[in-house]
Each structure stands twice: as C-alpha cells, then as structure tokens.
Length: 110
Ligand SMILES: [Zn+2]
Image 1 (spheres, protein in one colour):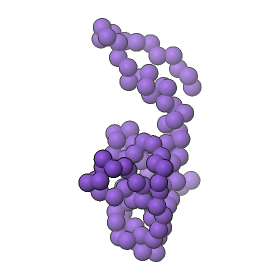
Image 2: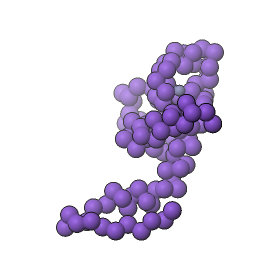
Image 3: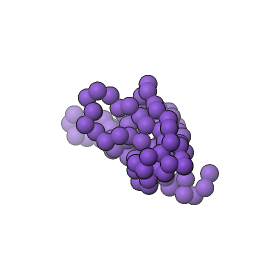
C-alpha cells in the first residue's frame, strides 16, 4: 500500500471516530459511475470515468448530503471499520471514565 493510501486510512479512521463517516456497514450500497460529487473520504470529485459507491444512510438522514466514495476509498473505509470492530472492546473501555473521576485501569486485549 502506498504512503498516500496510508495517510488516507488515517483520515478515514479519524472521520469514522468523529462520526463524520458512518461507522457501520449499511445494508444498501449503490455502485455507479461518478457524477462529479465530492468523495466523503478523500475530498476529491468522483469523475465520470471513475466508479462511485453511495451508501444509503437511512430515512432519518434524508436531508444529509449523499455519502459517496470512490471504489478505492470505500475499500479503505471498509477496512477501517473492520479494524475498529477488532479494537471495539478496547475503544469502549478507554471511553469509560470512573464515576469518582479517578483513573480506571483498562486491561489491554492486544
Ligand atoms: Zn475518494
């Protein structure tokens, strides 16, 4: 994997963690040719000559802009989701704070 792709993985990962990108795989994904929409992963337009993947986010989010990605970005995003699933228990444990404000020891699972 190229260095650029590694950086993009970091970008996608931080966007997933900050809820700018979906953190679950939706049941409906539409694939088609690009229409000039901007990819939500790499912020570049998806040209007509490129494949675009559009995620259906759900009825409550009808007003949200379309969640479209390049095919390559979709694959990176999917890889990020898979890596987060593996680390999921660790992330949840790290987010928990002790009620008394003290530090809580989190057993490392990795
Ligand atoms: Zn992209």
